[in-house]
Length: 341
Image 1 (cartoon, rainbow, N blue to C red):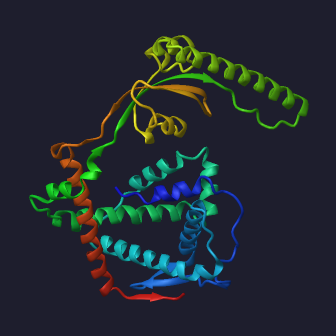
Image 2: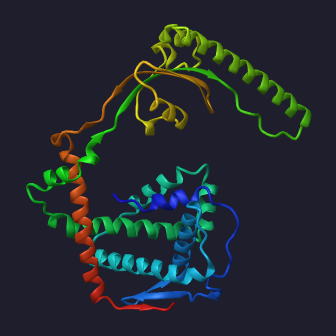
Image 3: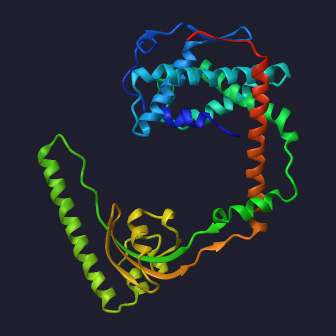
C-alpha cells in the first residue's frame, strides 16, 4: 500500500513548536472557508491549510524557506491535489467501495504508536490544523484510492512476455551487487562530553573525569596500534583489547560491509585499504578504531532469474500508476469543479 500518511507522521514528530496564525491567509489575504467544490461537495480551507503547513515543514526540513508571495501558487497546486482526491473518493463510493471503521482505527493506532504519548499525538495533529476526525477522513481517502486501484485498474495491467528481461538488459547497473569489504576492527571506547549542568562545580568535575577517561583510551589505542604495526596477530589483539563485545570474540570481525552499511568514518577508510592492510587510529562517536581489511569481494551482476520477481513488481507498479493517472484524468473531465481562491 502506498502510504502517504507516513510522510505526515515524519512531519508531525519533530515540529511541535511555534503556533501558526489563527487566521488562514494567503499572500496576507484571508482565505474563504470553502476553497472549492467538486460535484457540489465543498472542500473547506482547514484541509488546505493543513496541507500547506505540511508542505512548509517539508521545505524547512530540506533547508528551504517558503516566501509569503509564493504561498498562493503553492496553495493552488495543493488544492488541485485535494480536488483529485475528492474526485477519486466520490468515484470509489459510487462503486460501493467501503472502508470499515476498524481499518481506519488500525491505521490511526499504528501512527499514534510512533509518538511518546497520546497527548503528544493530539498536540502534533493540532499543530498541523488537524483533529482525529480530519485524520480519519484522510486515512479513508487514502484507503479508498488503494481499493479503487485494485477494483478498476489492477486487472487491466498487462506486461509483455519479454518486458522484464528487456528492463533488466537496459538497467543492469541497478542489479549490480556492490563491492563488499570484509572488515575487522579493534575498538577502544570513549565517553561523550557530559551535558551542561546547573551545578557548575559538578559539571567541571564531570568534564575532568571525561577527559581523563578519554586520554587513557587514546593512550591505549596507540599502544594497541603499535602492537599491530609490530606484526601482532590482529584477531588475537582484537580478542584481547577490543571493547566491542559484539565482535571481539570473533577476532574483531564486523562482516562484509559496503560504504552505505557502516558509519562514515569506517566507510571512508576501508575503501582506501588494500587486502591485508591495517589502518591507523580512526576516531568516531564510539571511540578509537583500528581496521584490518581481510578481503575485497568484487561487485557482481545479480542473475536475471534472481531479479525477475523484483523487476515484475517495478513494472507492475509503473504501469498501474500510468493507467490510474489516465483513469483519473477521465474522471476529472466529467466532474463539475469550482475553485474559489
